[in-house]
Image (cartoon, rainbow, N blue to C red; front, top):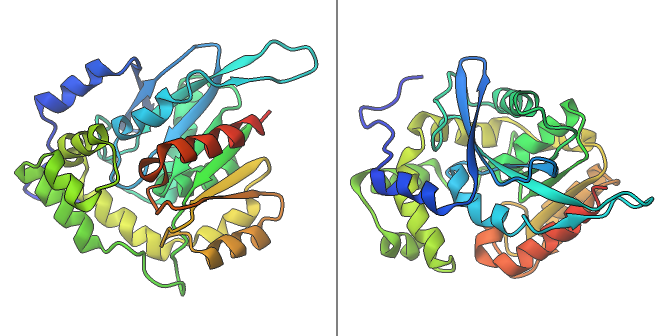
Length: 294
């Protein structure tokens, strides 16, 4: 694929956001693609690899990672308690990571495997939102994980209807960001979000590859989540928004039947952007899910 003449945009104010996070930048190679990650530590904590959605660079889920750095998991049997080590991935074509030649689930899951190997992560937990949840599902079938948390994975696919957000809407938002936007303009589309998250989206959305959005959106309708989901091993928790158009009540019911060992958790009153719509409720559900991983 070839990027459009308007290339990825990463401004100095966006880069300055990295100074505001306590995370440390890490770099891993997946084939010829350099991947960037934000590592919140501690180095001896249980690794939690967080994989964001289609138009979310790592910094966009920084607030999720921050809320988990104080989470302590007790393995029992007299073992010492363990803290969680959140590590957020800039998925290829996003944030500071390189573009890729392909943007399908196989390539994305290969990147997760490269991160696990490159950082020497011992049986991590993988948590993904939206596109990231699809990636986490595939990774869970291939890697030795402590568990997986899938937050509102797209359930569109062959013979399942289109993804609720059109490609044109995504590309319109991207063009808006590359033109130059601000938190007020983002708030018109995402009024429930905290001001910080609106501002981060305004500054960072331009860093997303147009090709990555186009290919990933096509994958939402050509790659079937339910081809993978029944094989995702326990422990796994699927968290979904109670008002999400991406994981509907019928979709959640189908998911429960297709993988009986999985836990299905609804966060009432939230849409697809579960963490952004109600951070407190979403983080409570996530903390509960993570506690089941040991």
